[in-house]
Image (cartoon, rainbow, N blue to C red; front, side, top):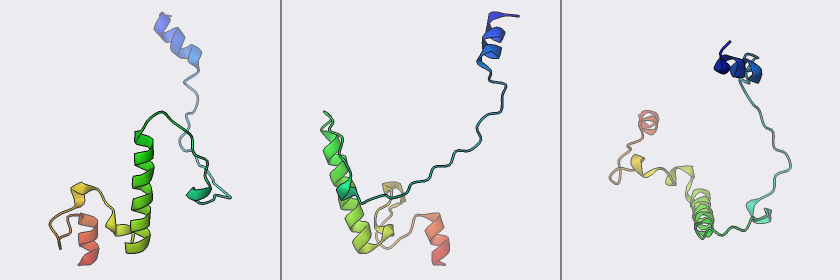
Length: 88
């Protein structure tokens, strides 16, 4: 048996592989009560601020107001094919 084959068989990869993984979260609290891990990356605060602003905009105007720029077209148009189908 060549070394590569013996290494592979030694890893035991011929067993069944994981096909799915489920997670369950309970007792979650709002972001304002979450602990904040301090980092040396100054971009971390910027990302958190952007996330808070986006959440506030979604809450005030609806989930559709924040979307990837690639889906944004000229005002009054829908470039998202899924939204276009539902609008017809």
